[in-house]
Length: 212
Image 1 (cartoon, helix red, strand yellow):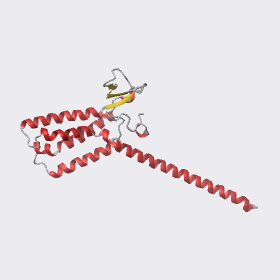
Image 2: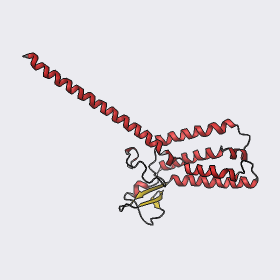
Image 3: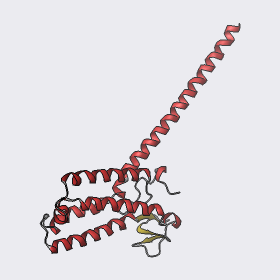
Image 4: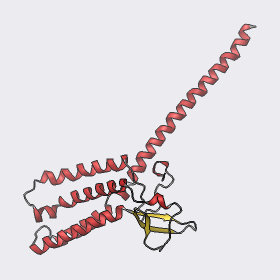
C-alpha cells in the first residue's frame, strides 16, 4: 500500500525536476540568443557608423588628385583641400538620422541639440522630438568615425608618397588594420541609435538599439 503511494510521488517529483531543468535550459538559450543577436546587430550597424561612403570616395579620387603619388605643389594643395572636405563629410553623416511621421512618411535630417532638423520636411517633427536630440554619445561616435577615416586617409599609399615618402611600409599596412579593429569594437560596445541616410529603419525592432 505504501509503495503504491510512493511511486506517484516519485513520478511527480521527477516530472517537476525535468520541467525545472527545461526552464533553466530555455533561460540559458534565450540569453545566448540575445547575446548573439546583440553582437550580430552591432556588427551589421558598422556599415552605418563607419565612414564607408567617405572612404570609398577618397579611394576613387585620391589617385587622380595626387597624380598616383607623384605630387606637384598644386596636387598637394588639391589633396589637402579634398581631405578637409571629406573629413567634414564624415562628421556630417555621423549626425544624420531619419524618422516617420504619424502619416507614415519618411524624413531625413541632422541631429541638433534642439532635436532633428529635417532636409525636406520644413517644420515636420517626429512624434518624440527629444529622442532625436544631439547627445554626448553622438560626439563620441563622430570622433571615432573621424579618427578611423583620418587614419585610413593619412596612410593611403598615394598620400604617403605625396607627403611623407620615407614612412615605413609596415606602418602603412598595420596601423589602419589595428585602428579599424579598435574602432569597430568600440562601436559594437557603445552602439549608436542614429540610422543615417539610406538605412531608415535598420534593426529598428532590436531592443538592444531601441530608443529609450
